[in-house]
Image 1 (cartoon, rainbow, N blue to C red):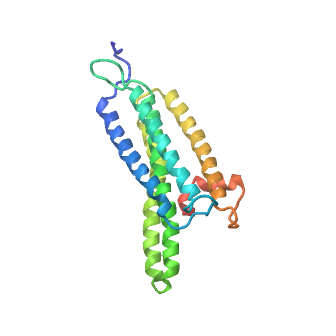
Image 2 (image 1 turned 135 degrees about the horizontal axis):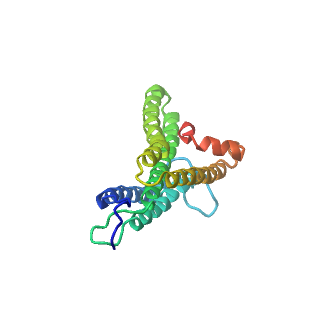
Length: 217
């Protein structure tokens, strides 16, 4: 297939590097899903022999789904020719989905970690100040990573995108819409996870809070 001279052509290695990141993320998510039941906290459900971590579980499964969709987006961005240049805007769409997947992976790791540290601190009150420092260090690191993956990464990808401005604006609008939908899903899972604990809140407040969710870890 001959590619027009004025058509966007991105080296296939750019896409391959991103596929490596996605593969690494999928491996991490798969490991954490299998071991999440060992984490402290969660809610007890009759008929289930371990505590259920609704919020972190949903975050990890969404991370897995988003990563797989991003993988498909990257693959279909490559032209069927002897070079395999990436010529389709789905390459940038894959970037946006990849960043969302990474952000959900961070949420699925650090939210239960925060709960575990709080339970640990309650058992060692004489070490409260030291444990607090460890807690804050972990949460700040995870929070910075979450904000970079959710906001900084997508903005940079859209600003550096070689595709038409209208395409980038449409992708940006679609990203914001998807982010709101995922925030709504996360808010719903947070409500389910706090049933009976007196922590329920309005869905609008939940969605807005989820847009800066590291602050609630």
